[in-house]
Image (cartoon, rainbow, N blue to C red; front, side, top):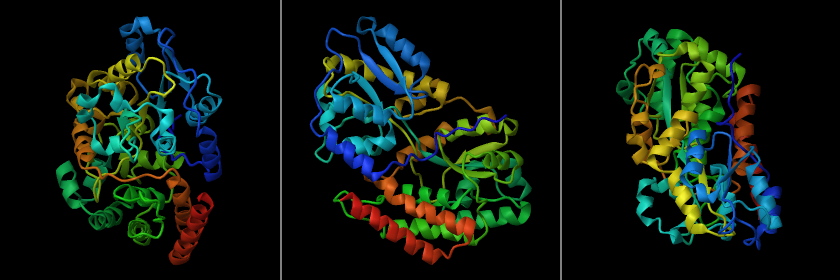
Length: 424
């Protein structure tokens, strides 16, 4: 039986929960967070850091008696609970990328890492990723554990059968823009019957990720009716109108079947998507390559390590954080769980420069490194997911029910505006 992963599925909360929790946290920056003579407590989640890296840290810092707690997908809620109760606050904690916009509103709960002598280390991390954990007044509350630069995955055997190029550089040139990509897909479908795209949601979210704006501006302005959102919507609709969308859920059994049988030979995904392919389509090993994503890179995923303000010995905590995130340990985490390193130095580690047999002997790291270096910097609001959800819903209605695209756009925009009004 094939094992499906859910790392790429979007976590969507509710505005009401976020607002209520934010209010309850507003004065909770004190509490137990690891005194100078107590054990160092570290919260992470399954796959957050490599197991051997965590074991190594325990050996490297024996006097700190590091205690690792593996939290489930509800790590945000558990952090909210201990911050609110001012008890049980970990010394060091992971914060998922999708939760960082929320915690940036409560930055006083965390230590400004720039006060802990890390200036010489910041150049090793992408500016755009550090920006995701930086407050408007310049405080840095987290260092990135990993990032999710995107690329175009494709099956060389299916493209060859369609008479299309298969060399990564040639495929990148032929699919440089979204329009080029769609023209490429029309040739693919005419020759083989295969689809170019998994869903309208996939096109929409990837185009949104390529922009410098999302659903809310830095100044707190609603952008649901902006040119960037309309561009993402129109691009998704065009893919559907040109007959290039399979209309299945990314990561579902139908997706796995299509990837295996070649009816979905092109995929847009982050670096960690490699693991999804390997676990769900092992028999296609050697048939895949990776190249630049049409229209430019986007980022999907990537988390952070933070030090709560309640932590007693911050100087020791930052030493542990720096150790966990050094180049060698990030490379080890990549080999163990597939998290693409946030450290640029880690990309030169031998583990990341090995040819990958699954991808026809390609060194895929180079593709994602280039994507990371060209990533746009954009502001993410704590309610971006809630504002984006109506557009995803209405695109699904267009795809599965044949709803009129203009009516769907009007309904999505109206619903997003309602969410926006309720959030104020």
